[in-house]
Image (tube, rainbow, N blue to C red):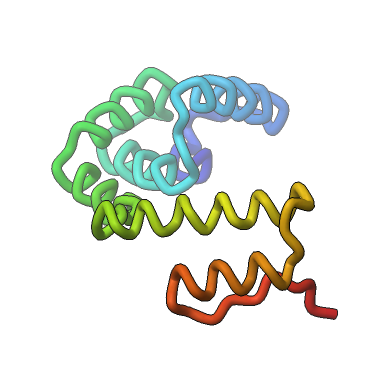
Length: 131
């Protein structure tokens, strides 16, 4: 940034202090590297003088309110967690979990639990530890 504003005449020591202050301010605003890069580029286009942190924070807030940023958030959002297809699926899963709990507690052997789950679910699962 200092290369774009040579008239600011900041020494490397001063730039280090400015950078540390900016980092602390930006952390408190939860600004990530991608947002920071966008805002620095925007500040470089807007400002005729070396920007202050208040200039950067103003641009960040504008950016976070923009439709482009909101669309980006929507793209990055995790998909909704899958739900059970039916109450029958939920009951089957609960029943199989209860069978596995009995295996873990020792009420059933692994072979017995495997057999019961396979019968109940109609699929072939293995509760035996594979080596």
